[in-house]
Image 1 (cartoon, rainbow, N blue to C red):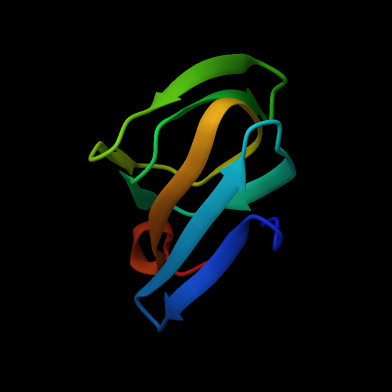
Image 2 (image 1 turned 60 degrees about the horizontal axis):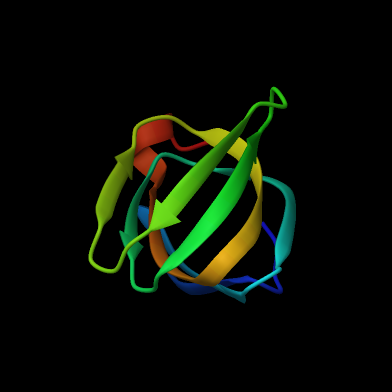
Length: 97
């Protein structure tokens, strides 16, 4: 997790709540997340690079809520707008790893 873009807001034995914020042009190094709920607060467009090297363009729209069922690794580059998301990683969803 990139500490310059990710801030842990709350953590206990059940969840870790992270706010990710970045401005246009930001590039995040490869990092991992547990299964999580994502709540988008800002508007932006990211280029996401997955651990296998594949890429995907993702539009961030305010109010969008997405569940990510599996743990994953990724890096991202902000192509437009801003990243302002709240991530709720669910520790029990991955066996508490």
